[in-house]
Length: 122
Image 1 (tube, rainbow, N blue to C red):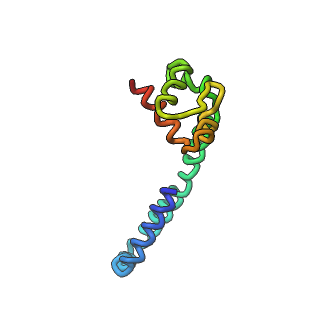
Image 2 (cartoon, rainbow, N blue to C red):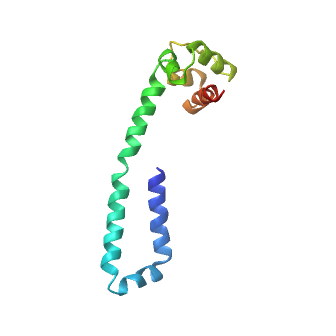
Image 3 (cartoon, rainbow, N blue to C red):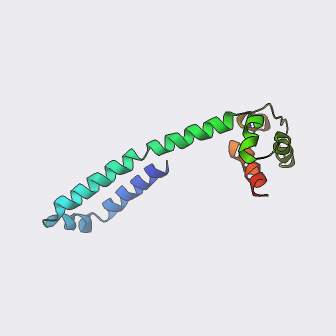
């Protein structure tokens, strides 16, 4: 999403400054500029696969039970349950996944994950 917004903003910027933008292409360096722009666009589009690997990891972690996530934070699952209860979450159990806790509490998954980062920083 961020990359699409950046690409859209770049195209809008080029459109708003098209007179000076196309002035660059009147001399012999236009081929190098076109090659650079083309290469930049290709590299930009190829980098989209990074998003999918991070999304896959996030999905695995958010669907894992608390008892399986606890070793990632070097704490006991009971500590995570306690912290989530202190953060105002109800229906918390070490047998539930973070997504299940979010659904049961009618909150966003990020509201469930945030207290976990606080555990790690203590």
